[in-house]
Image 1: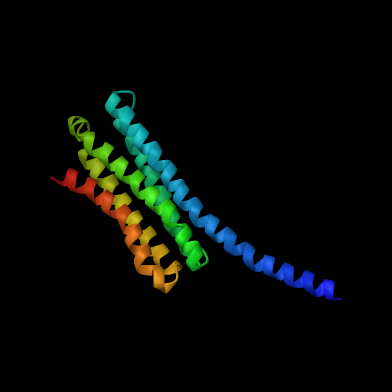
Image 2 (image 1 turned 30 degrees about the vertical axis):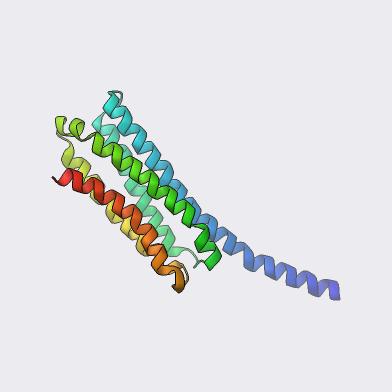
Length: 174
């Protein structure tokens, strides 16, 4: 009888812990998907400057990025809340994503003369604004998912991504 009781407790603990592990993985998957598409866009921008990709290729990759960001925000809204430890484990992926977005924005700013020459600077600005709106939605979706004591930190970390995009917007708004 004791064995059955211990087995029941073990199974219940596993059942409770499993959704939490899956929830954290879901968050990580969102940030990984966004990071992967940021890398794709950066590569296409580099190829565009090098002459082996078109402005339309950049636009398509940028549109895909906006879609992935928006889908991520929607997904996060439906995810389970995070514990302190889980929230802290997302710091590194968010910081990495912020750095990746910064690198992409640097590439987009460096490519501005190319986009201007092709008459596409308005398209770039529109894409950046769409990505900023999506990134704000991600920030706003994740912040309430972390414990109250960490919400300011989560918002600040996620705001770093928005801030990087705003640098690109400022460059194309001149």
